[in-house]
Amino acid sequence: MNRIDRIQEMLAANPKDLFLRHALALEWIKIGNEVDAKDLFEAILTEDPTYIGSYYHLAKLLERIGERDAAIQWYEKGMEAAKTAKDQHSYNELQSAYEDLVY
Image 1 (cartoon, rainbow, N blue to C red):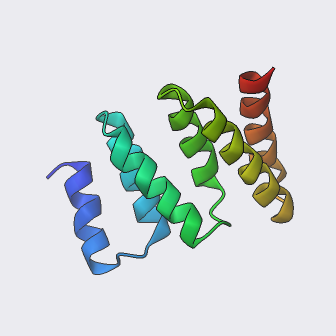
Image 2 (tube, rainbow, N blue to C red):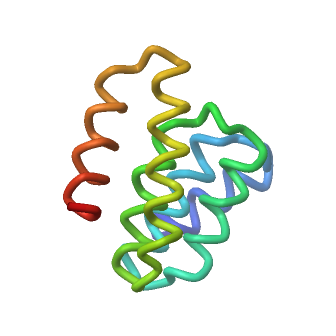
């Protein structure tokens, strides 16, 4: 059984588990399934805007597929969420990626 199958099996028992959903989106990126990864990251952040780790990965994905404006928006939302959560490490990571894209 591959990683995606294992994660999906665990998600069947706990479909709202954000960690597992995030992990599944990352696995989908690895195999080039960017559409499902994007949809899943967006669903995670819509349901729980405090799940800060997904902002970076979603914005990076959007950059790769040429959706620059959307990537900028997600970086900005992520920086705000990180600031609110007082998560300086995530804020710095998001800000650096944002600045690399914008400037």
